[in-house]
Length: 362
Image 1 (cartoon, one colour):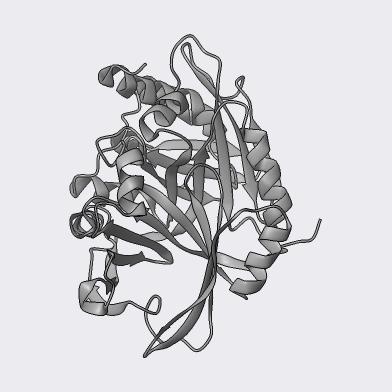
Image 2 (tube, helix red, strand yellow):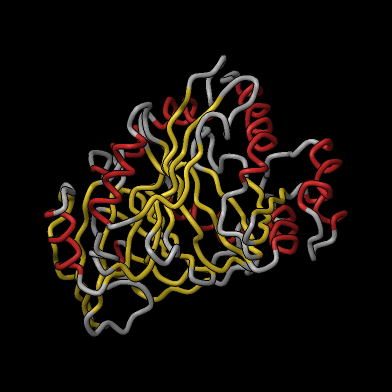
């Protein structure tokens, strides 16, 4: 297999199509500490949509709302609610990446085109992936702006909470389609199967799921894929697929430098997290051994910890960030570990099921 056949450099941004981008941008600035860096809308010549580009560390979100009730964006929101539309990549050459992706079996979503303004130009193309999600390819020529041509710099600082970059993005797909999309990422993107989990690894008394983690050769871009597994009741994946009305991005994991500081700040700003039961912390020291963080602080903030042969990680998951029980965020700090918290799965999914039960969806 050719390493990095599309010449991907990094995740450029994640675009969400939302009902009110102005209010969503305010939420992500005030609650998550992102800073607004750029804007596109009627004032910049954009007639069908308005977009706000946000940044913290190297993590970028693009929030877009439609100005036409009959547009593709409006239909996407009607079907999925506020949801991830585009996981965009910065590439060496957008035309090359697009051509290679299509030759390797991807379906074209947007033919290569120029984006041009007074700050220079860029090339943009896109292919379809699971559900209504796409992957854009973006390459710059001589661009001097802060985000993309067509955007003007419009800065509004947020209170940085220590987010460094996007660690991984998880996709939920239908039963029987996980291996199809894992093979697709292998064939089209040259990704490898980094690790996998079956229903013996990820199960509770009531529900289960299966997961394959696809990764580029540097492990900088990781895309776990989940599908539901048979259980006594409805799994979190089934709930997601029902309310999202199909496959899509389930959560975005944000890497941070100091999870205790980040989670404390997020909680102060009103971000709601899953609550981990007390019993989890009674067994934690014996299970993970010595860590540099204060164990009482970990318990107070309800942070999860897991250790593997490479080190340990700390993680915590928000509740869904909108009224549909679909998209949520993970806050993660890695101390050597490149895993995904396998030892936390049972406690995590029991917490998720408690929330499902409150919603009447378990």
